[in-house]
Length: 447
Image: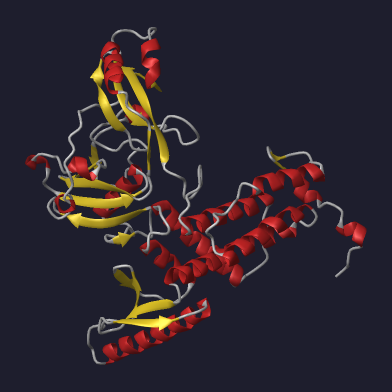
């Protein structure tokens, strides 16, 4: 290879200068590009409680990335190392959680404690138990016996098969509640595959500055989430959505949402408008686009809407607000539970389980699904696929084919009633563009 001179090494890489805050465009000045990159990187802060090793590895990547202005290949190196650092973060969090002692449940169901000081100790221990399990399975197959109980890692009140690899670490973190979100579960799986491609490369690849920043941003969110800190406005693990006290005003073919305090100023609206007061996500980048489809009995909006009062006239709305003075709140939309009823070839739109619990007996027949998902459409699609019977969607547990998890399916008594929830029967109110409350359980998408 040809080695560059010191002066050549200090020359900016023209490819990097084409990436600007507004997309691809005319070349930026190197100093402006460096300033912009460092300002973006400054927003990727880690929580103070993050393990030192993970913190230092992340800071190293954050410090190296701006040098991609001089050598474009650095962006790819940072993105690749960020994927590998995900595993380091999980290992550090595992060690911190177990505090020097790992407990495995033996085939007899007895807890066995083992001292560990590094993750290599954990890995060797997990591999040893894996070999013991392989022997037990082979012996059972040879004797035509059912597979016996195996060595499993103790996790809170349960246990899991654990081989010490990245996928097992992800499963451990999820079972412990350190990682959240059904859509994130799929994204975490993709990041694991990308990490494996970095560790076992099959060819050359070249990442852009945008890809490097995005991967580093995701890494920061994963690390912070592992140590219990959500990311305001985050892509993966955002803080709970802020819900404002909101007024809905509608008539046939027209829908308006406004801050509740503006109802008294809505004098230009005709008297035939109906009004309702609700808690809803109406501001910021996550403003709910589905509010006109609101249905108080079903989950038809992207984020949950709680009806506080309505419907009624503008005068009644003003009076209710003055007497009750509701306040905004926050709602965590990740890993929500939805109840869906399949009966007579129709599948209902998702309900909150507490609303399903308040249904009269004549509306409890059929097959019920309790689904964990981040959004109601994800829950509906998953249950529809199960009803259709022609997809890879999992009938139990986390689904590998979509963004949902089947918690349980069965009768009303086995699913909804088993939760022992306080029944909730809100007033019936439908937005002007609310869709059907049930649809054929076939391949047609819900919206």
